[in-house]
Image (cartoon, rainbow, N blue to C red; front, top):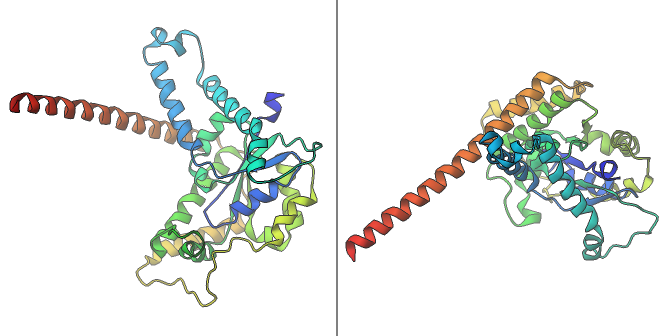
Length: 312
């Protein structure tokens, strides 16, 4: 049972691409419930990797190596625990949301629409080997407009400039496309925002087929609301002369190519290995930074002690 239900769904892509509303759509399914954007699981995966390094650093003289606990088993056990916590506390989430569900709805799977997880797909797959990812792709130009007006609804700025908005979109979309290439369409499903708007029934039906759940018309209900509104004024123009035109060209050109080119059906072991190497490099960096920070703290404490002794 645990292996069957430990199949979370992650909606990824650039912020202001409709990830939140799509998460809510999937959450209307009788076997899926939406969770708030979590933000912590990507970094958590890196920290698990650091812990595994420590636990295997001295070979058979360290516990994980001595007990033949593989990295896959180590990660997957944390993933199962996270899944069990989230599924087990679903009634608490629904109580806070003042929601009631009929007992006939099992709601054994959850969907998370954290856009930043676009950068952490490799690590999330280590925690949840059976997870699936939906890459929601929206035209960069309206995304930029929405990012620049985000403060109208949230009270805080998502980006500080038009160029930063274009770069933000590029970073997230490139990461998602890389995951498409690495893992193939059985793991990462690309959904065009235009398809969701123009033919929502077909888009949702295809999406539910991908995640392995039967079609449910209730998943269309959230789409009756206005999608992805940042209250952009109708006369708002995003054409800052300070923006690097090459960045704009790169983003618009990438979107155009992705519209015309479907994602690969099969993953590439070469690209997957490159993503794995990038994950290991990040873990190495985080472990080194923490080590250097602790050493600096010890040095400061020693100097403070010596100074106190001299001035006593």
